[in-house]
Image (cartoon, rainbow over all chains, first blue to last red):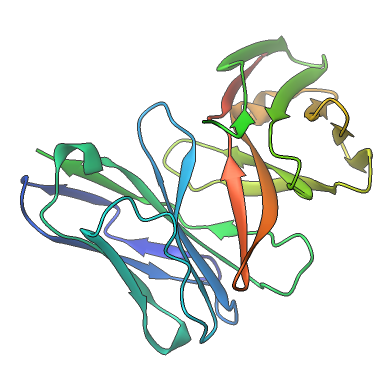
Amino acid sequence: GAGVSQSPSNKVTEKGKDVELRCDPISGHTALYWYRQSLGQGLEFLIYFQGNSAPDKSGLPSDRFSAERTGGSVSTLTIQRTQQEDSAVYLCASSLARVSYNEQFFGPGTRLTVL
Amino acid sequence: DQQVKQNSPSLSVQEGRISILNCDYTNSMFDYFLWYKKYPAEGPTFLISISSIKDKNEDGRFTVFLNKSAKHLSLHIVPSQPGDSAVYFCAAGKYSGAGSYQLTFGKGTKLSVIP
């Protein structure tokens, strides 16, 4: 498909376990973003990758959260020792960073539930 | 502190009438603004944007108005259609340094267009 894909679509885990969420951006998009949306909240920025530059990690809520982007394409977001407050929809977006309005194309999200 | 606020969590409008969704922001460093539309179980999709150097941008049934002095923007949908029923997110963007162009989202307004 031509859009951003994310897997899994749903993930239920137990408190304390680690989880990995995957994002496949649109081919050719150099910028990749991770957001999360907790219940009743807006989208919260987590991390941004742009080409080979060092990622902007300013939105990561704690050191339990990390992300990598291999080969400038696929990205994984890892949450270690999950807590119940980590339950949210995690959204990935990609964009052609050079466009002036930086339109971001979103994937369908991964709904994470921590029991 | 919320930098982008959508004070109406929901809005109901009769089909054929105008829908007006409002958004307020606090950070004068934002230099462009976007509206995204989100259906259940899908990621947000870009709808329309406006640069801070403009006060209006129109695309078909959708018009975004920006009042910089009031730090306020609005999305007008005319005429409203049942298919417009979705959650609408306002987003504001600024360059945050180190090659990162970040968006800050509001909490969203759920629009219901009644046939």
